[in-house]
Picture 1 (cartoon, rainbow, N blue to C red):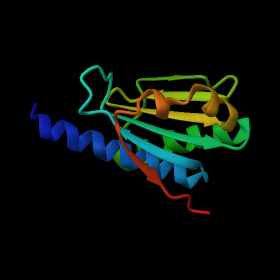
Picture 2: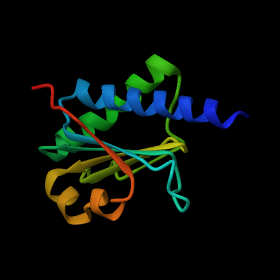
Picture 3: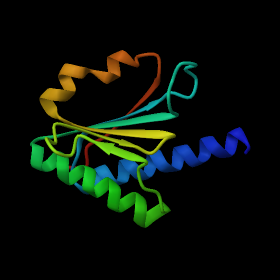
Picture 4: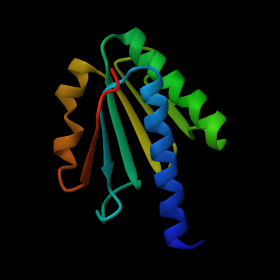
Length: 125
């Protein structure tokens, strides 16, 4: 498969995940483009925060519904739904991270992947 086509599909998936996060009023959405990093495990990380475990759960459910509805995609694997402090949704080429605010600060993925191209998405509220 053409490398450019794969990147376009990954970008579409990342954009659709952002929309799903925005539907449930996620905060501080960041897209990290990892395509130029040799050791990266995927093309994009999409990271956001929720104000409560209930909102974290709601955001991850919104991402699941929105990606299925809009582009027919669902995660290969989802982890963290039980405690809803950090829900990881692995779509293979894109990984969505939905954090409870304090948990996000602790793990600080943005700093760990500081070499990635970063795009901050403005909050809708």
